[in-house]
Amino acid sequence: MEKVSLQNHWEEVYKKQDSPEAVSWYQEHPQVVMEWIEELLPDRSSSIIDIGGGDSTLAHALLQKGYQHVSVLDISCNALQRARKNLGEEALKVNWICEDAAVFQPSKSYDLWHDRAAFHFLNSKKQKEGYKQALTAGVKPGGWVMLATFSKEGPRRCSGLDITQYSKKELQDFMGRAFKLEKAVFFDHTTPGGKVQNFLYTLFKRI
Image 1 (cartoon, rainbow, N blue to C red):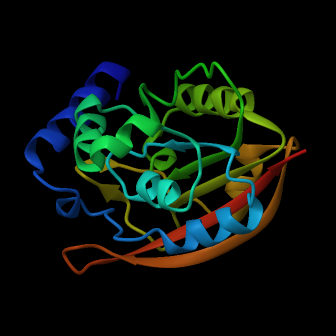
Image 2: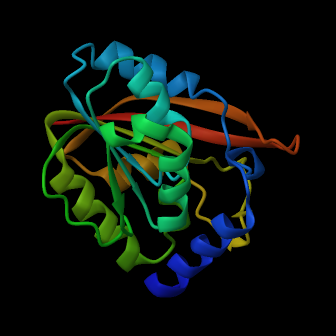
């Protein structure tokens, strides 16, 4: 699916859903990720970007913990508008970026690149190469990448789109020699509708 139609797809998804809880990937609290972030980045001035963050709860959780440099990127401007509305005045503390991660050109580098369930929607070689270029440019040496995708035991489709499932080795191969795998865990996410989706959460360090 090309960028324009992919963006249109997600704009329609967020037009139809009237609350964050209506989407399958909703988490009331991103517990796994927040535990990792607080351990890795005790300095609250660390810069963090949430890829495909939409109107997820991570930005709010980071702000509550005192993180001062939070960016959220999403292909859907509607998702970001809803996120800003939900955060109220707190939204002024976040840098909002409406962009496709596969063509994103970071203007700065980050201490942490977080992506939960965005990367696995990129199925073509061109999309994946573009994403890898953005990621490599957007992470500081010594910085971190948290990448969570559907595992081989997870769904093959989500929100009406095909996804790419990943194993630990496949994510290692994608990240390449510039990134060292530090951690990989499986996590069952229960959707608001009661379905269980198996995720693979990985943590890489930029060498």
